[in-house]
Image (cartoon, rainbow, N blue to C red):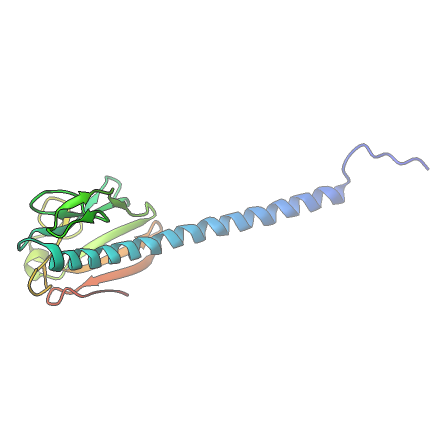
Length: 188
């Protein structure tokens, strides 16, 4: 009996298709996990930047209102850039080197949060809420959010409230609460 080995058998074809289906399923799950991890990382970055702003305001702010954190939307409402500024020099201090006098000696770039998240801001101040400030208008009507702390007490001067992080599907990732009286913030 002569064997003809000119191609694949039906069984071999089905095995290859099954392997490809399994690999593509694993790839889809992996992409979803990566997006979730980036969304959680964005919450942690935001929270650590709040801590940095509070500490630098208390430690090196030369005068009241000299340090603040600015959150800017970059158009698509999902890409956020966070910067820490010194109100006297307008220099970016996010991760930069600062000397004993509070002056920037080395600048670094801004922190850009994941494009897979959206942040919704709701102020805790009733007057700001009544004036329509919040997500679209920001903390002062410009569409940008400024977070300022009191140098003496650490209380929030501007930007207190809740920051809700959602993913691209609209599912809640986390909420960061910023207490006006104490300046404390936590993730829930």
